[in-house]
Image (cartoon, rainbow, N blue to C red; front, side, top):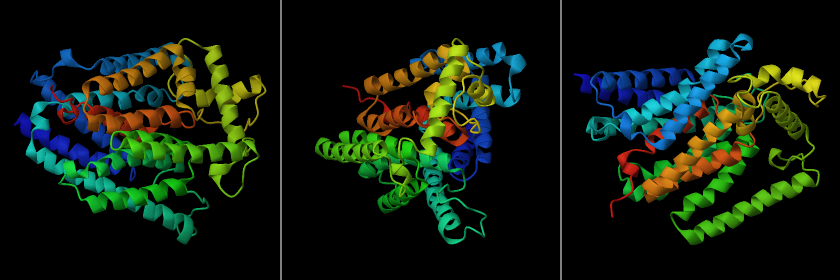
Length: 399
């Protein structure tokens, strides 16, 4: 009976996840709760092997530990205490999902395979529906849908939609290129969603997401056809160079991709970067606490006479945000997780896994310089991808 419940709860969690990324953030809690329930079911029956956890998982556990330690040290002045401490649910759900998904009873279950395919197709449909809604909201019925923004944001905000789309597109392209190995997926449907998703990414005008996508693209093709990868790399380099040169020459108002280096948007981000750096200098060991930088930006900008004092947000940079919130200890733990994940992919995974997940890691390294990727939906997506990267499907073939 336990196996039956575990399988069914896992299947339902896939449907919740399919709806969570581009449709509604509310489904994230359902997904996390179901994964926790399945973990508990296996734990009670002593069917979890804690001895063979990947080194990257241990690093991620240490990152969670640092988050809790930082929150404890700063507890008295912690703003939104419950939300600040609750941020650990995202990496924790990634660890629990890794443990649950690797269980042989789930990996070899045909019922679960069937429903994972259905959930995946539903997820692809949400990409299309989010694009249609976003396009309608911006271009066709802005008054009806109460919108005055020219950037496409789907059902979520622009940043989550843009950065989430870019990561998914890199993974989806890999699936498209390997569609012959996955006969149960409709090739035409995959490419159609990819094209629509790319148009959505472009119309979101998220520069960091596009930059990360362009840099991740050659890596996807490297494992498919090295000559094509070189051509793609040159084209990507040309586009990136154009963006940089135009920006340094004053920019162009015709496109957000070509904004000048001194534009209001770039000025705001630079002020956030500097705020995070000053915050790190003030508390270099454990920072101000999880998700706390935004509550201190105003006083930091006034104290150090930084520009854009009206702009009070996160740092728009994953690594500066980690350093400001959890100090050097938290930043090193986070980088250790990323580095070990990358190492384990290179050493123990097959070609498909490298093609699928290495571009995602590269995207995080690049796009993370321009946006705080670890928000609700994108954070859930990243940790889910981390979890499934250790499935038997992606293990290195025995020689």
